[in-house]
Amino acid sequence: MPIAKKMKLVIINYGAGNIKSIQFAFKRLGYDAVLSNNPNEILAADKIIFPGVGEASSAMKMLKESGLDVLVPTLKQPVLGICLGMQLMCKSTEEGNTKGLGIFNSEVKRFANDVKVPQMGWNVIKDLKSDLFKGVKENEYMYLVHSYYAEHCKETIAKTDYGINYASALQHNNFYGVQFHPEKSSLAGARILRNFIELDVKSKNEESIDR
Amino acid sequence: MLTKRIIPCLDIKNGRTVKGVNFVDLRDAGDPVELAKQYAEVGADELVFLDISATLENRGTTLEMVMHVAEQVNIPFTVGGGISSIEHVDALLQCGADKVSINSSAVKRPELVNELSNKFGSQCIVVAIDAKEVEGQWKVHLAGGSIPTEIDLFEWAKEVESRGAGEILFTSMNHDGTKNGFANEALSRLSRELNIPIIASGGAGSVKHFIDTFKEGKADAALAASVFHFGEIPIPELKKELKENNIEVRL
Image (cartoon, one colour):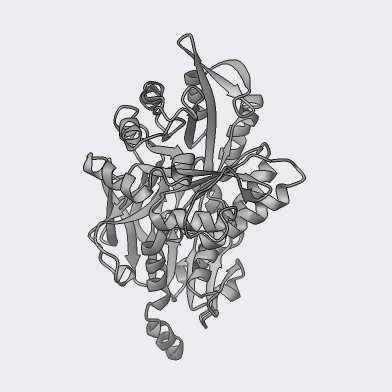
């Protein structure tokens, strides 16, 4: 087992889905991630994971109950939304007619029935545009499980085809979102998690000095 | 493009792999974690663990195994066998399983499919169906295929889809263990009549069988056990041949 490296990594635990897998994936990279829904602990983190699996409106309800719907959009450190986490960071989703956090300027829609829904399995990501994908090749395979997709917007940093061409990753300033499951996407997925951990955090520290 | 999935199935008894596994370089072929890691490394897209000893008493042992697999394996996996309650599914998912598969318990109480998909999302609920064709009629069988019912395969598959199943794992008992190929006619009918992914199971004996089940059977994924465990069909070669036959796979 690698020695745990120094980095305060928090996985927001608001009751939505399989977060153990994400924690294990970081552990395989040598990082101990803390599961928490405590605002102070989240604010003190260097990097934050915003997970989510399940149904959008009930996940948003849980998020609101813990007040995290207000906290998350104000975070200054790098935040990585995964799967439903990414979708909740968008303007809105058709699933349960849910208003999102509005971080990404994208609307989340249901796949049409000309494809099998959910999309389940490995598909490629392309037109990669972010440090998040450093060392990841174009058309790399990622594991995806979802019935709803984010429409393209100016924040699109990766694209995938499934019936239509949609945004499989988004970035707005310090906020990142991926539709796929990097924690379940073999070595290429692990590389993306490592890239996220190694993102330069200078901007955050400088800002805290400014305050 | 979404690729077709290759899924080795591991039978588990008391937290250990059963059914002879003939893998070189394995220190302990009975260790599900080591076997799972090896499969992930050679390009398996997903894994299924079937707990054939599932009883209340050894539930803890299985949960522990699931936790160890989740710790060390970087591809998705499904756990099935003796699952019939929300609490049990919750425990399995908490330990890091990506999906659970239910079978007889869904036939006994179909509402279970609704309850599970409402609580955990369709994406992690696989309904496994064992069926046998008798005089042109596909009938669902229970308890590992030992108890016949009057339920029609296609009606049942449509019902569990409408109740929120995210995927169907269909095993043809006529084909299982024969190594004569998958039940492609029934599989393609399932794909035509349903709009969720279908996993083909039962009958894998050669690379051609996989090609046929993806082309003729329209399957989204193919599951097999012994041809993988005994190295009769190495996964890298299988995927290479699928690709050469214009079937999209992850290489």
